[in-house]
Length: 470
Image (cartoon, rainbow, N blue to C red):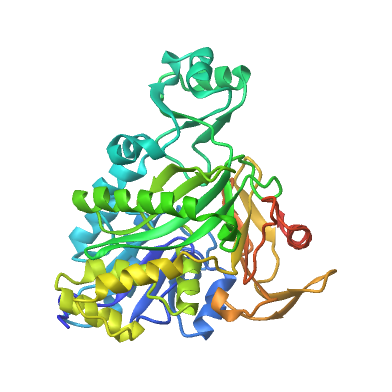
């Protein structure tokens, strides 16, 4: 391989769990993070290479939580230089790219394995994505783009129905999404932001789903359709706040829904690829009781569920989307692209059959998976410090108690009937709706009615009882 093109990979992130996936598959893979969570100790025992700024600085909150701030830190750059062999170039991966990250990489001579910030904004920002995905307009809910000061509640009610959703350009886990159910709510929001441009859409009654994909030169690679767990009062303060995924729940969908999803994927692939976009992307969908599929939004970056979904794909012996993402940026030559995938996943791919392989894998990776995860977030309106948290590790539930049985850092460490709990370190500051703890398991969490099963409600209650913030 050309050493000037392919050096070590450094995943730059706030939370080390965000970088999980291929850390024990691809050689010379490093996680560079801000946090010093209990995760680091167990991951290192398994052989993961991790640099923690909080650990080095002996401070649970060493810098403002930003990948750009982390990447420009002198100690981080020293670690990157120390772990990059002579003649090789460091490869940098981030969860979400920015102009500042691009600038740092240019100045330091790093190779950035992410789509450009310009393409990210074009397809990620709520209003921009709607305007740029013209071939998918029929899949979006009926939408009006306007400042709130220019449209009245009665006008919106007439065009969109009594319930509608306001989305501003930026935000995540539901923070930029406002659900309007009456005129009083709308007037209150309108007074706060009369001149703020918004995407105002008809509220779709249905189940929320999310799906991961990767735009490649050989076509769209996708999988992991999961039910999106949102708005659980005990876990988030936001009605639209996302708190987890259930990969088993989609077993209830009919073929008609899958056909519509396939149509969305084909059109999205065409638009993104023709624009020059490559790499990871995610979509959020709403599916009604009659199996009508609506495209709610596009996330033009690594989806939040990528780490666990990568592990699930490895369990199923698929080539993970994250591997295609790396190969797409690392190799201009198709032969090197194939050699990379064959080296780590032993599929015997050649240029003449890779497109056929992707089609077959896509079919299989859309099948339901017995797995789920759910997060406990800071449900207050203020930034809080964690004073007590549940101990990280593997647990079992005996219908009465949630009992720790061992150590682990990923869902690959558990067997059916066990639960992995990932936690945030004591003394760390957690902003509103940011994660305090996460539970992962090899079974479904959600019942037929779309509610959390009673067993898991009891487990969540026990976990919440061990968490203290102030």
